[in-house]
Length: 164
Ligand code: CO
Image (cartoon, rainbow, N blue to C red; front, side, top):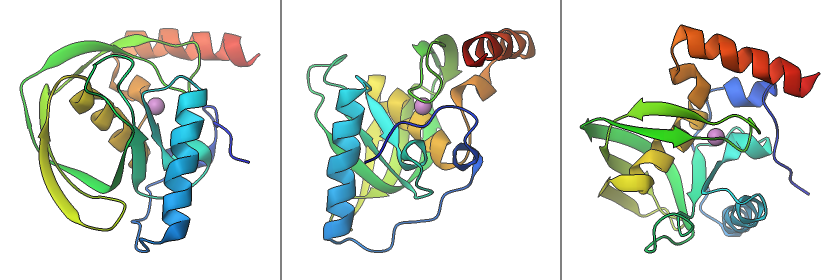
């Protein structure tokens, strides 16, 4: 049984390896990650958050935008980004912390679907935001890494209090 890992797990700081097998096992994992994300009321979940150092993530933004649906992104890479927007983020791996983060407003993403088919697509709104947050996870980056030094210190103190 998988579980959401919390901050401090080394796997959250590792560079993930690409997915190479597009088989039933991958489909089971995608299904499991989508269930895990829904149970945790999340809008995105990256493989390192369930202890797997693999370049893949799932999203479902139906809670914040009506066209949202469960989706899987395998071996995703951001190729271009445009604009800038401030939005409040949280993370299932850092419970209790929410902070405003500045990121590009739109992205062009190259990825593979569950069958291995290559895709190139432009995303904006919450989809662009959740994809950037989850792709950070695939590169060992957490959203708190984007905060100013002062904010980082405040968050570190909050985390110490939470984990005490
Ligand atoms: Co996260």
